[in-house]
Length: 232
Image (cartoon, one colour):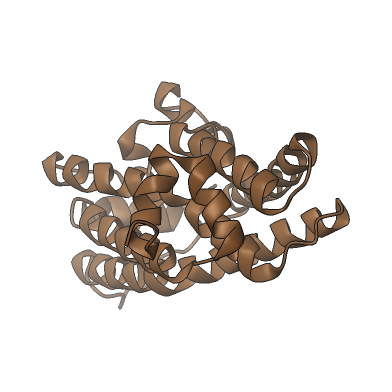
């Protein structure tokens, strides 16, 4: 079937306008949601296998969590973090996509759109497909590395696709978090989301871009805020 749910995951990258027009008629979101969760979990799991256990402990201490004398071995703690991160990517990421779709839906409804939530979720999951591409590229890149720092593992910065790649070693965590938000795949996703909501939400280009950028700014503020609180 040319317009199958699986085909849309590819066509949203190659023919986005046509794909979003089809989504306006028949919204789908399950396949991209599952694929994004699986790819995110896979790249998280593989990345953590390249982290030095002592680097993991050092990162914990930087965050103000001192290890008690009877703490498990660094290897044990890293293994736990690896699998908890994998499970988190698998189950928490879909929740984040749903929340993002809800925020997009609310802002676009305020802008005059009559789009329903299911279509908002469909546009959101398809608009985030570039992050699936990033994961597909990131898996072989991670496998080829001998080691990956804990900071890069947490932020996904080992792919070198954001301005964070230009930061020096003494750059602060907050600045790095801000720089990592200017990312090739993020820009790609923003463009797709703005196009998708303009077509599916039947709003002006300005309203679509404004809604997407407003929600994206909230995400960046949360990311930078977490870096300020947890990354000392």
